[in-house]
Length: 363
Image 1 (cartoon, helix red, strand yellow):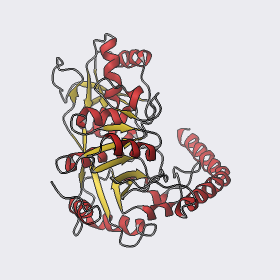
Image 2 (cartoon, rainbow, N blue to C red; image 1 turned 180 degrees about the vertical axis):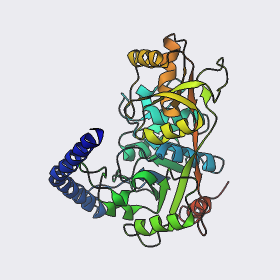
Image 3 (cartoon, rainbow, N blue to C red; image 1 turned 180 degrees about the horizontal axis):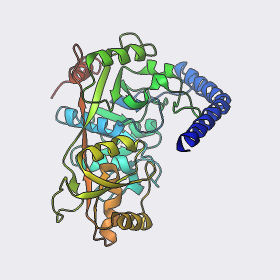
């Protein structure tokens, strides 16, 4: 019976895709016209006097942009005067906002808040839905800035970045996807031609050279010739307590996994492979947690500990501080690592670009 039901659902999903093709065609024409207008300079494009490094993707949903921004901040922070600029998705404010110690996810968005908690003492973390305006403000109030990291700006054509990194998720590579609403592409695959490099994110740590070469050959069908393709993976650290007075994490502790991210499966599978996971709760990406959600999570935990992503930690911690709970909460930090390749090294390529293209002196 279950197999029969699954087959019906699969056929319904395939039928729905066919019904959505005309809408994808209209969407594709609209994005093609928009790109044409920007390419021909019929629409205003701002090029900042500050070197702008864009990290983005072609698809909706998470490809790991924020962890890659964090990777870049760690690599570049001691070499250049940096700032980060993002839209601040999900915030309840508008315009240009600089993160401070009092900022919440409602003020600046969950991902910028996550970056601020790690780098805010050294790097201005800024949000502005119109990146061109944001860059102009940065030029005035942070005049020593040498390099701005633009988060999720690949489709923000009103700004011309100095260098553009395109991320694509190993689990849903852009060349296998389709335009919205049939698939998840924000624009046609050919948009990859604007990238100076492609990073295949969330790869298995054991992805070998032959598999990399195969993926690279398919990506290069859509990019400019000789575009470098790199491969990155996530490395998980030790789960950290929400509050310093909590006991340290125990791998054998029965836990409930809670996530509010675009692609929770990778996080959940990693947790199940490493810890004693007994229950999972999934919320939507950028979910605004409230006291009711916290109550449901605490009830589901029922004496077990709760493990969340760091992105959810920055939103749940203030709720926990304001609402008493006897459940212990921990977050699981992740870091980006680039896989070894025969001829390409991401760090070397990046610093070469910053020296030759940007002509920024290394500190």
